[in-house]
Length: 147
Image 1 (cartoon, rainbow, N blue to C red):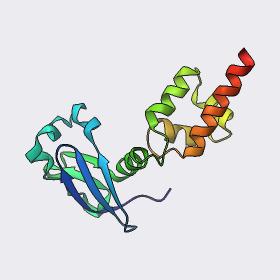
Image 2 (image 1 turned 30 degrees about the horizontal axis):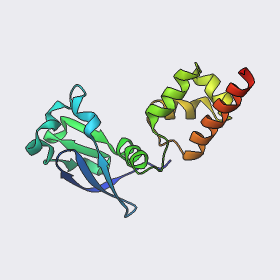
Image 3 (image 1 turned 90 degrees about the vertical axis):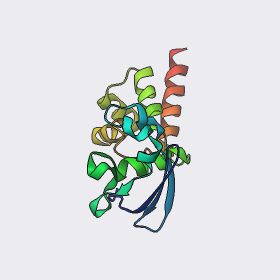
Image 4 (image 1 turned 60 degrees about the horizontal axis):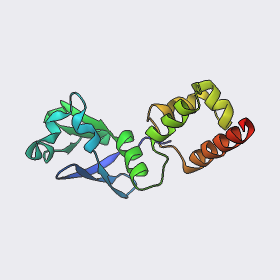
């Protein structure tokens, strides 16, 4: 995946960012999940949240001259998940846990590399919908074999 670069950001209360990407596309992302994470609590303040700016070189969004920031790839992934164009990371991780799969076992089950599983597990890359379908299929077949 090419690194995503942001060219402009507009913050809208309570927790939305509208991002303009180098590609010319725009995405609206809800970053509410960050509000209760240690180090991000200041984002709950509407006036502070509104001060969002693009990081130097477009690698993310920042507040307070870089004290708080969210990188562009994470925002890109969130945008894809929130528009239904990617399998949410938390659902993928729940599938791993539910099926008691290690990262290596998940890679074998899905026919992809362990490194790719690490990217998906850590939320570093958007998870394509075909991976979601593969997870559902693998789990269905596994349950049928167990019955």
